[in-house]
Image (cartoon, rainbow, N blue to C red; front, side, top):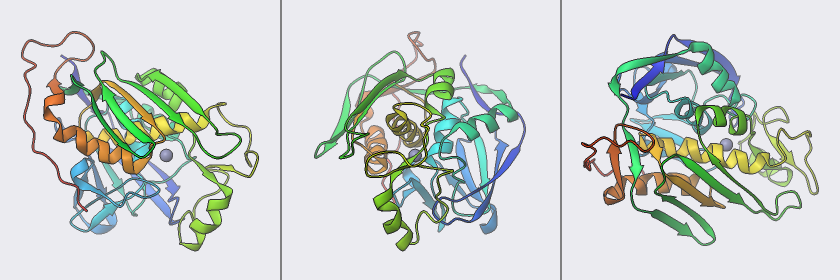
Length: 303
Ligand SMILES: [Zn+2]
């Protein structure tokens, strides 16, 4: 049996919110099987917000969730780290609306999870195995999932910037490949957009410490961690957003010029396309004989 997992012990850190600039306390706490990943705002009482597409809200520069007027923002880097280390169940406590930005990557969250340790639980993990293609496109932005024996991501980006005309990467995602190749890739922004964000009260916590900033011709805070750090970060974002389907996916995700809005729209579309996947209890090739299609409630977007 491929068992569900949680963390072995509670662990905390402090950081700042990218948009608010406020100090945030983040704690990860062990949770039982089938609990899922849930956020709790300790400044607002005991209301949980499950990390699922049903609770999607406010997709702009980052991915946000909300339930019963309790909201959490910028969840995607933490979610990517959790699912890539195969943490199925955890309670994430925050004393502020935003997950701290840390260094703009998922590497600090991977470190935190490794420090906490991983604990198997007495229940099987259920994977969402893609058996037929699912795709959406919006103009020249595209995202799709194809059947594959493993979880793989192919991402390509192109921007009107000399450093970012085109970058593309394909990677089979495992705990190791994510930690080494994807988690350290930082978020990026364009200098010309920074002033506009600030005027709108956003990115107040943003700095050269937590984002790659692109000027007219180059990067303000070299060195890059990878030559193609930008497309690697897009893969990180896509993995975090795809986590909102609520199960680890077995399939090949292919995205071109997508972003949080399309990633999350796609996550909802996956759950609607019940003929295109099956819930199975084993990863890789060895599907169990009882891997029959399972019907799930079709979620609706909150807005
Ligand atoms: Zn990101």
